[in-house]
Image 1 (cartoon, rainbow, N blue to C red):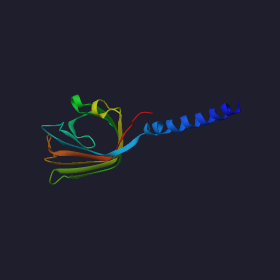
Image 2: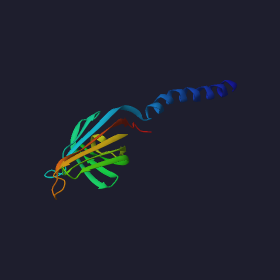
Image 3: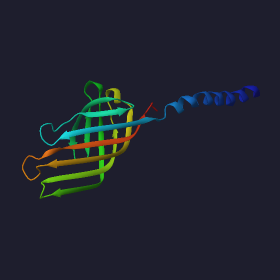
Length: 158
């Protein structure tokens, strides 16, 4: 009888040791770096192509949902929700040359992926730069470029 009472804790300990590696695999693991680039024309093509490169390489477009929320839509390959917060911005307007330029820097977080983006999340920093000529009239000519880079993580369950 004593031998059986001694084997029960030993068996439970062995089961716990076998189960631990499986539990450790379920935790999020760092996968790599993801970069996003988007260039938009101020006239003509207000929604330029969005390019994702890094762990996932794809092209899509940006759907603006609000001042701090976007969806990066990669068509049949999936989409992600991106939340962004500006930390610093500046604008310069030259009235005599009718030009302007601006920059914005901030942070972003993405999640809620579908398709190939399912179970991925990430965060990082972004920078927006824009320039325009003929800025004194109703139709300035120029571009806005958004670049964002940060780690991407695969949540393997849990």
